[in-house]
Length: 155
Image (cartoon, rainbow, N blue to C red; front, side, top):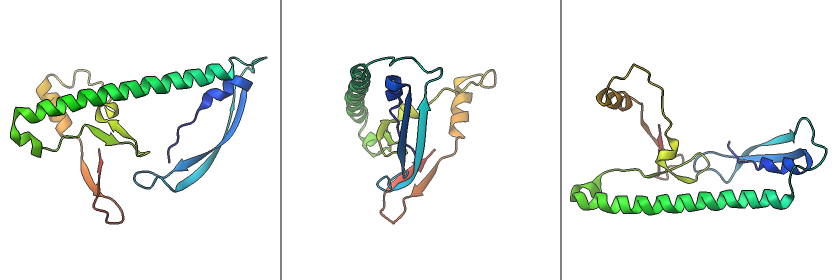
């Protein structure tokens, strides 16, 4: 299972204990698959709080707002790109193009966030060789459990 943990509360007291429920993966995120007890501690222990609760709350809110704005801008750009893509040729409407994919916690995310550069060194000498390398990456379609008819891709 996967879960996000807001760890910055440890900056207030120097120690933080919490229990985190781990959600199931894929479409079954409603049923927890386990619990994890965490104890976070700053070492060496600070003599007083490193920041105020308001500073932590403000920082978390600022980051969430920035992430939301980035998502909104990406969605607008993707929508414009999709509209332009469909106007190029009528056949494009039948192509399977994936702009968003679901994470293991069932959150819709731009597919570009799943991509990380690989260090190829001198093993790939051209763009053609790189394209051939990428075409060899295994891809399989899995049917979701329960016969719901939904699809789940695994790369």
